[in-house]
Amino acid sequence: MGTSVLLKDPIQAISFALGFPFGTLAVPASTPATVMLVRFTVSAVIIGAIAAAMKLPWPRGWQMYHAAIVGIVSQGFQFLGVYIALDHGVPPAIAALIVAMNPVLTAVVATKILGEALSSRRVLALGIGIAAIFCAFAERLFGVGAVPVAALWAIVGLAGISLGGIYQQRYLHSGHSMTNYSIGVAAALVPAGVLALFTGVEVSDWHTFGINTALIVLFNGLISSVLYMMCIKQGGAAATSMLFGVIPSIAAVASWIMLGQRLDVGIVAGLVLGALSCYLGYTQSRRKR
Image (cartoon, rainbow, N blue to C red; front, side, top):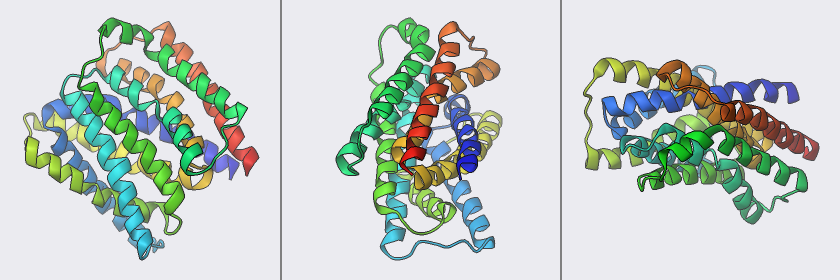
């Protein structure tokens, strides 16, 4: 299983990180609610169809309810917060920085709700992960000068992905990761629909919206989200969240290639420190198993 996890983690980190530049392009071409509705609907249909064709086990009874709650919190609230923040002018660097604090919030909550010990190795991994995040975006953060109030929406996204992972680990124990995700992402249409009532559903640039939303569905809606649930099931929410130590730097590299945002020494340092943080977090998890 160790080899399988090591293969899944880089794919998950890269596919999740790509969502920031794709989202930066898709949201201004429409509305946050439009991106969410399309993303969640297409993802639910595709994953549900694949799961049905493969005859994978579906959760039953209360487990189906828990799968829906996980989706509403970890998918609905996460991307509601992130997309609104981007739509209100929060720089992608700041949004990525806030969401990348997932390991810190998850580790703290896990000690309270799941009773997981905050070992010295995990504390070291968390510290290095935080250092990686700030190294990656130090220049951009200081360049912005002040964090906009709309960045609070990104904190909603952070709370969503952290609390959703904790809830899944504690309550969702049956069904396949793909069937659980299909149910959850369908349930996430509820907060997306509520948001649509207030912001509307429209597209101002179909070309930009279509291409980038399709890429969001592929990399975020299908690949990273399913792998995230699988990794939580295998290694726990706290260990899986360690991936976020390296995601900001990957997002920065993608933004450099796609949006022309230059790399700096801090990003390179963030990549190195983030990789070390991930390694310490995973070896800690594997030792416990």
